[in-house]
Amino acid sequence: MISTVSFRESQGRRAMKSNILMVCPYYTMFPLRFPQRLLLRHASPHAWVLDPFCGRGTTNFAARELSLASVGIDSSPVAVAIAKAKLPRVDASDVIGTAKRILTSPHASPEVPRGEFWRLAYHQETLRALLLLRRSLLRRCDTDARIVLRAIILGALHGPLTKGQPSYFSNQCPRTYSPKPAYAVRFWRNRGLRAPRVDVLQVIASRAARYLSDQPPAGRGWILLGDSRSEKVFGDKRLYSLIVTSPPYYGMRTYVPDQWIRAWFLGGPESVCYEHPTSEIQHPSPAAFAAQMASVWRNVLRVCKAEAKMIIRFGGINDRKQEPMALLRQSLAAGGWAISTIRSAGTANNGRRQAEQFKRACGTPLAEYDVYARPA
Image (cartoon, rainbow, N blue to C red; front, side, top):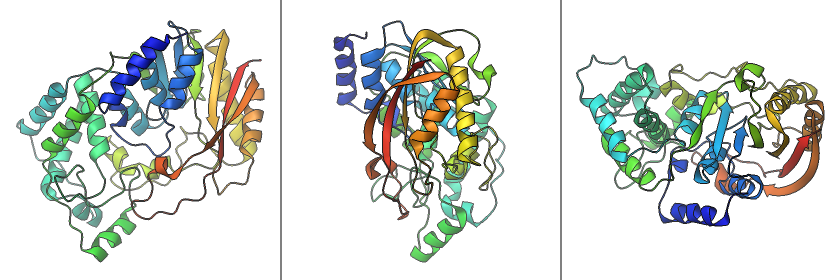
């Protein structure tokens, strides 16, 4: 097992200053202490850790803190871009220098997105700088500095206006999910809100200094953009002895529209797409959802060691009356896993949802569970 000393040292390092984990919020995220506790308790020093629904890479960052190798997989380009920034160790000066070179190099004027939303969401000079960064990072994002720079920009793309120095690039917005254009335009116009002219490089420099001031050693492993229902994503080696993950809850299908501005920065369309991507688990019925989850668990089983343990945090959402644990039990049984323990994880509290910037109503959170399973 991981030594208590190494864990406490990493915790002390985290307590001193902010870290790269917070580089960009992601609407569906579990707290760092969840994988930390599990890795400390169940992982050996040479274990490989897997998260087939890695989201913003919290499991992978926890593994990095404890010098464990890890692999994360997610079907969302936004999640993968954020998660990739959790593994490298890079100096703030390298990130700032990269941004400065992009913004000051000779270049043709970028094409500006059309529509009232874009005119009101960003000051024209701020948007121009973002477009230059976007174009350069789309052409090449193959160095640690560029990977972390991209994540820093994603985290600052939209958020609340501040009285002092701006810390986000946009007009008043939620920081966790992207506002929908029609609502946002009405909101800004009704309140007479104007997008501030933001020094993009200054915001990047401030955030880089904050997130990169104290870091654990670089993480070992990788983050993959892929559909965990596909065998090809996992390869064919039996690497993993510990799986820590939290799959999408049944009925949760808003990842793409809720992250559309960040998706745009990564090369997506300049308008909201409401179609549910085929690369994500589909939700036509409880049975179909459980069957797709079972395919993921079978793929995980194929690349696990015989003594592997899997811990899953799972729950439900308010507009689906289906019992979440029944779905998870069904999927695990069909996927070749046997449940050994189920523990209550409480509820997802509003403080972690970060969804109140536009007074967006959140229902009472449902109970969540930590489910421990082994190969059947």
